[in-house]
Amino acid sequence: MQMLFILFGIAFALSLIPFGWLVLRGYRRYRGTRVVTCPETRKTVAVEVDAAHAAVTDLAGAPDLRLKSCSRWPERQDCGQECLAELEAAPDGCLVRNLLTDWYRGKTCALCGRAFEETSWSEHKPAVLSPQRATLEWDDVAPESLPGILSTHLPICWNCHMAESFRRLHPELVLEDPLHKEARRSAVS
Image 1 (cartoon, rainbow, N blue to C red):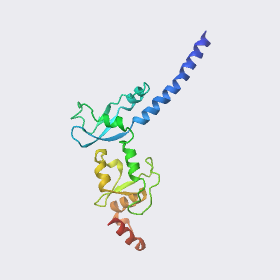
Image 2: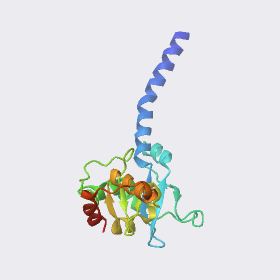
Image 3: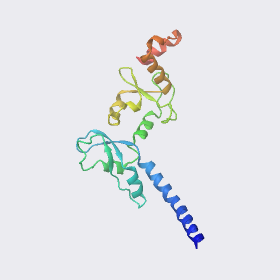
Image 4: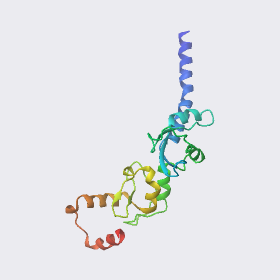
């Protein structure tokens, strides 16, 4: 009898593996910061979906989306969350990572001219060059300001971002290569 309970326990545990995999897949789909237009103000806001809740309810066929955070909170935390309609229409289209990946696709670095082929967001992340010629990492940018930045800044590769950051922070340690100085000056100006 004890062996029967052990077998039923093992069978039950194994039956949870597909369930766990589906929940994990749903969680990965709904996690991350998204940029949407607030229906109330008509301005861009950054939101995060309650990914765990969406993943579990997605198992029933239709995910129940609700916000976990919004850049307008806590002041407007009691809003009707009408922005969820935009998320339901295109859940992956407003994900910040996807927006940035699409923006870099087909572009070249404004400083060195290297083409952006595959964008890596875990290491050697690309950056942007502001109109004031300062480089910015995406971690330093508020997601709700993304549309403005994408229209006014230039894409730069990780190598150029590191070189420009070092040049800006430690100008006394930088030696300019006379052969490449003119090329860099024309790219930056």
